[in-house]
Image (cartoon, rainbow, N blue to C red):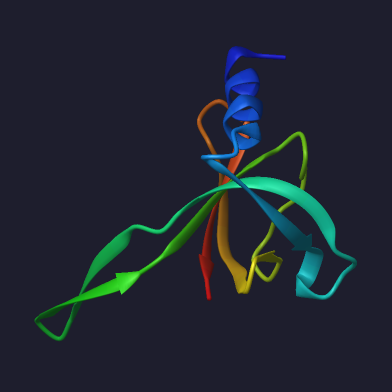
Length: 102
C-alpha cells in the first residue's frame, strides 16, 4: 500500500469529504456501494465567441475499490444520478478521476 493509497482511503472515509454512492457498471448493473470524493467545479467554455459557464461533476474513486471504470457507468449520490463520460487514472495510479454528467 502506497502513501497515496493510504491518503485516498483516509479522504473518502472522512465524513466531511467522502460521500456514499451506488455504482452501476454500464449504468444498469447491480448497485455496488462505494465511497467517493465529489467536486463540482464550474467550467468555462467558448460557444461561438461567447463564454458559457457550465457545471461539471468530477468523482475520485480508489482504483483498489473499482479496478475498471468506463464511460456509461453511473453513480447515484443521494438524488443525483451521475453518468461517467470520461475516466482517467491519476498520476500515482491510485484513483480514478471520473468526469460525469447529470
